[in-house]
Structures are given as structure tokens and as C-alpha cells.
Image (cartoon, rainbow, N blue to C red; front, side, top):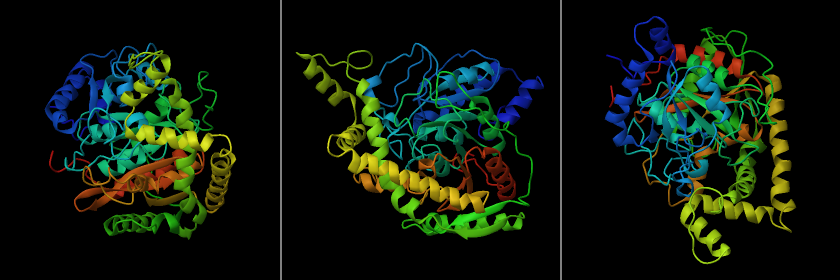
Length: 468
């Protein structure tokens, strides 16, 4: 019997190449796991009964375009939409034989930190179904944690891979901006969006990143990787300089249990041979969140203007084109997209552009410079990924600011275009705590090395006890 709860993608590949099971048998095992466990979790918005390929199944966040397979971005305004082409990352996965097993639930248009903003109901955390899995890639991270897929792809704008990976006790990478194509991805904020892997292990994460990364002629923001992706093997951190930014580790709202687990991981870095020192990122942490919530909504207001009932998706057809626009958008968009569209439209409006959006872009430059200075002294910066463990469903839905603060530690490096890796580093209240590793641009190999060494030493059990 195939234990999908513990099986890693690397182990699955060994079984396939060794002839111990077929791709169809592996696919069927995960389909059976979805049928058994997903009714309680709601990780998937669409499940594929069959999928071409001869390799390992993969789950794709429903913001990733899949030809002929529903792609809704978690929104009623795209309910029933069938793309006519695949996203580049979908094509690259298929080219390596990976079989799409389904499309995962998400906060609508990737706007949220709990997957409660989905128009199709919230996803629940496999560690405790009364709690959120994080967001917006909560469906992808919960699916991997629950053994419904060996790995998955999510997207990360302000922490939407890293934060849910932390809350679900799995590994999540937000790559350097520009290393993964956005072609065929339903856009939220184009200067921030990046697709990233969600896996059980750092080695699996590195391999999946190698599959999707690289220049794409369909996306002019992409670049060639300066170095081939390396699958990590080292089990020590000798020669690595690890920085501990005071503001990212002492921010208001970080739970004591989270601090305890992260501090233990930092001490483990020393034991593994790293040189550990403190640094500061005062402006990045203070201004990162407000800067993000001007830039991202502004870009969203532009990107989401295409959803008007004319070309695709939902159309409400009252009398007159203006009424059609208004009623289609009113019925099709949920509260959070409406909130961000209005905020972004205001920030871009005449007379306010320079005061809000323009000023935020200047602050973004300051954040980038501050991180660059810290990363001249250190190879890797470490902090909690999320200030809290998974919180109860409904706990923050009535307070948007409290929800936004869930990403206060994940957002600053994203604003600088930097890669970030979240790995599970312990438990607090019986729930996973995530450790965020941040590096300079194109330093994914360094993050994989550090994450793998810590992963081996921590020996964190990624299987939720209630499912074991």
C-alpha cells in the first residue's frame, strides 16, 4: 500500500524508475487519498480523473492556467472558465512527465492570508480542521500536508506560498522575482507575483524549482538563471554567515511559542557551523506592509479591470453596458477584491498618484537598499515566516488589518524581489512553526543548502498527527 502521507516526490520517483509501481498506480493512490480526506479539507476546486504523463502527480493552484481544465482564481467571476492554453509552468511540468491531479483552492485572486476569501468555501488545515491553512496558496499547502499530492505549485505575491507553508508544516519557496515565468498566470500584482513550489522536503523543492525556472520568451520579465539549480546534500552550515534581523524577529504580534522554536533553530545554525550575527532592517519592517498595500492593490485595480462580463467568465446581462459592468462585477467579485480594487484605483487617481503609488515605489527602493546592505554582511537572513501558528477559522475575517498583519514578516523581502524559503522548525500549541530563510537575488542554491541542513538536524515530522 502506498503511504501518500509520508511519500516524498523523490521517493515516488525512485519507485517509478525502479519499476516497483506504475504512474497510473501512483496517480490512483493520490486520487483515492483525495476522495477520502478532501471532503473535510476542501483543498481542491477541480480534480482530474485522468491526466497525461508517465511521472509524478502534481497539484496546481487555481491561478495557474490549464488548457481545458477549469481555472477560476477562486472567484465566481471566472466560474466555469476553461483556458485555451497552458501557463508556461504547466507546460514545463508536463514536459517532465508530471501529471496534473487537480486545481487547488485559494483566496480569491490570491488576495488573502487564510484561504477563507475563496468564493468556493475555505480550505481547512490538516493539522486542525478548525483552523486556517494560511493563504492565499492554502489549498496547495494543505494538499501536500494531507498527502493528497506529493508536491504542488502555488503563487506568492506578499507571502502566499511562504506563510501557508509555515502554517501547514511543509516547505515553500518564493523564488527570486523573474526566475519563473508568469505567462498564463492570472495576474494580481505583476511586479510581485511569482510561482513557487510546495513540497515535503527541501530536496523536492529544489528539484521542482529546477523544472519551472528559467527564461521564457512569453514573459519579458524573466531571466536566465546564473547558476544551475543544485539538489542539496550538505548536512552542515560551515562557512555560512547567518544574519538575524532584529525587527523581523522581535516584531509586535509574534507569539512566544513561535519565537521559542525560531530561536532554537537559530542556535542550531551555530551548532551546524554557521557564523551567526545580528543586523537591522528598521525601515523595511516598519514600511513594508503599508508599501505593499499601496503597490499591490494599485496593480490589482489595473489587472482586474479586464473582468467586465464582455470577453470571458461571468456575465450579468441587465439593460445597458454600464449596468452590465456594474452588476457583473458586483456579483462576481467578493469583498476582498472589491476592497483592494477601490484602494488601488484611489491610489492611482489623478492628484493622488504621486502622493501614494509614487511614494510607495520610492519606499520600495529604500527597502531593497536596506536588504542589500544586510546581505553584504550575511549569506542568509532568518526569521519566523509567520508571527503566529494557524489561527481559528473566522478569527480575523472581520478585521482586515489583523489579517494583513499575518504577512508582516513575509512581505519585506518580497518587496525587494528576494527569494525566501520557509521550512518547518518546530511546534507551538501542537501546530507547525515556520522558519523563513532569505537570501540575495538568485541565491536559491544557498537557501536550499541551509534549509536542507536544518531540515536534517531538526527531523520535523511533516505528517499531521490526526492523520497519522
